[in-house]
Figure 1 (tube, helix red, strand yellow):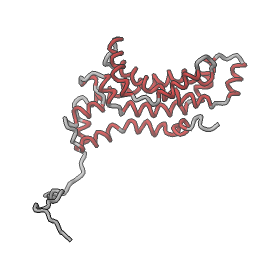
Figure 2 (cartoon, helix red, strand yellow):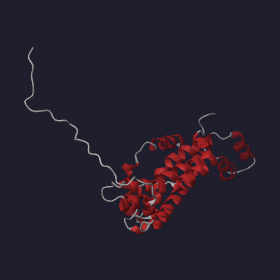
Figure 3 (cartoon, one colour):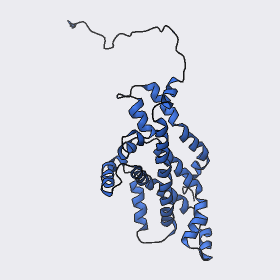
Length: 253
């Protein structure tokens, strides 16, 4: 049997390991947190984040509540098509709408501003809000609503005095999702807000000014992530008891 051998010596594909011995053992410090909290204009970025997040959570809830009641309890032509359109919009990636929506904002005069990002987050959050609230409202007892209408209550009175208070778990459930999404958003804020320090939110401030051009400072990134999580965690633990009730809305009759 013939035996073949390579004339070139085989080299290891892995480079040799180099080990260093530290002169002093590592110690845990809060220097990274101090750097994040003490960064220039970080307080302004926190205020900007609240300015974006609170209206971008309240506005879609208000609009979606009225739309969900109409789709759940009011009879009108094309209601089924509207429900199908809402479900279809749930699977549309928001990245497809960024450039056309920004172009529309430039034409109507709101451009890159807080009003523009409020409208953008409202549009992106409405399909989920309408779908979630409609399922919950459709599962409410029909006898209560019909009795109110027999007593002479209008649709607006039924909505504000009966349906809206009973739908609070679903409203809180969507508020959690919307608040967390808007607070942690980076892409929409980069597109629909000016690049000046006066308009930067926390995610943009951390990505642009603290991580550097290559984003390799992992210690700063971890500290910034834990710092920015404080408010969303407070909101989540405050409203989490309504989360499961809202998610299961309409699933069981």
